[in-house]
Image 1 (cartoon, rainbow, N blue to C red):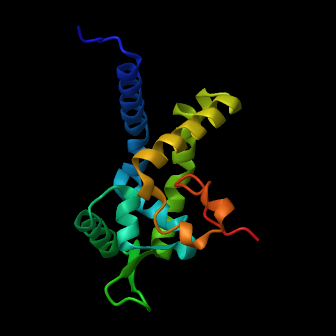
Image 2: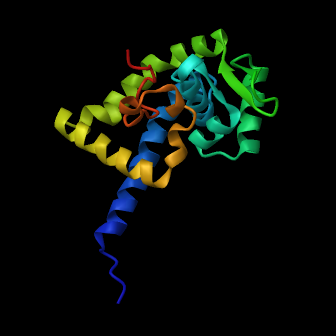
Length: 175
């Protein structure tokens, strides 16, 4: 007999339902700013990275897109003036995507509503202790299933800071 009430199935179902629900609640603020969810994710990752740029391959790894998929996203964002490509001084084959001032301005316009959405539909529903435990659990799972989620950030950080670097932590080297 298949255990349909297995808590592992419940965990996956709850995770999927929660993500879909939060995405639906935050979609409008992105749409109002003229951004898709992947546009926002790309811009926020660039804005929070050292030098506000990432190698294209690292950006693709962080977002989970293929390199060709990320190229299409960056092409579109570049046409809108939100991102600029920069060549790599040490490797002619590599290039960087960097957020522009226009991209920073667009991101700055959506962040206040996005933070309100996050507080309303996610973090504000948890106590500080619940949130801390939840974030620790998410990092543990993320590190196992998406080890490239912080690709390109770890080389700019001392070892102690690398353990905490993720899409939710501003990447600033320790002094």
